[in-house]
Length: 154
Length: 433
Image (cartoon, rainbow over all chains, first blue to last red):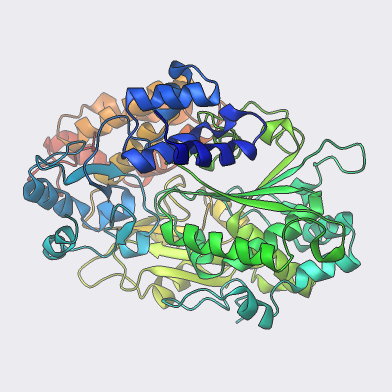
């Protein structure tokens, strides 16, 4: 069930566009913001609210890299795997993360703390390698910095 | 050296508030056009300035605007969209403008919107640019509060609303028509042209999509004139340009320099040359979808015709350097993995061809390549090239591949003949997923 606050925010987005379904991506973002991901139930709720079939909305939701259709951890790590980070050796960061968190790409740590995902170019190529955790960007990364960075997130 | 776009940007400091921006001449162009110029005069001025789109295509901005229907019979509302998606690997120039001086972008958007008589505008910002999102939100509110946005702007009768739309991650959203689909709440597939967005764009109404850097040039053109703008460039191309360098150079970064500055000057004087222990092998001049240039091209001026004549494209003007310790096959594989992953899957050559290319490159990189693989890659560069796909994603992907096969063919052949990657005895690069 969509909460009153979610409905209020979605209504605002709907007021800006010609038809409710035009606001479906914004609605998914709003629901993901409060739940962390889009469950089948949430997808159906949003679809009903904006007047789309669940299948139609799912085709939109699954198109975008940052709409999560599977549960994620409390914090999502996006490691840039694009060319400038590749040249600057992001793979050592990747291997260190795999080892420290004991997970591969697409997986969540056993304690539900982190999900690790690859991400194309974070747009900070002059400070490669880079990663993002939630809203925080880390640049000019070295393996030595990782423990301190990860410890910030509980 | 004049640096109109970045003159008020101080790295590490918060961008200018609206009040501070006004104190250094901000929003003067808006006052000028609303008071003294017709929309057609603004269009003519920008056309005359020879401002070319800074998103990569390099089309004359004023000319692009001139295709928008004008006059009382034109469809309404009309839309203006700032393309701030910037997801091409190696490209990070608009971030500097978005985080450093959001009011300059808003001012440019008002100029563009007035020129085409748009009443609704969007900043389409990529998800990862969190700082930019915060600063733009703040700046839009300040502009509304000061009467630069909203109804009857500065008493002129001109109305303009502005919204920030943050994307949810897909490279395709940077393509003009796919971006419009994303704004409409759809999958970001490209649209067939014609009709062109200038006539039938967002929600079927006339729409202009301009790159952030392009829009940021506009206040300065209005304030200083077309001739002034033309003279900023060192060669035939007008204006300044944000150039960036990433890779194994001493001081990677982004600088506003005259259009036509040579590659060597950018690399050596600004990026500080190669890091100790690394030698230059090649570069992509303007993002992941441009052809490699090599040593013989270093004295070329960075402008649209010069780079095109050398067989590449200036693209976004942000260079990616390949050094002698980076495997050209691995480098190309990384690029093709990106393009294969980000293909929207709408047309068959791109959806099927790019993963095929990626698989072949992975086999070569792992030492499992066969001589005939190079022929297969060669024909892909043609069959996925211009004219064979629905949009420019696959042709863009083929640019670094075809030039890597041209300039670094020996490296590809060595992988095949020696059955391993000469750069890394441990293991080949593994695509993420």
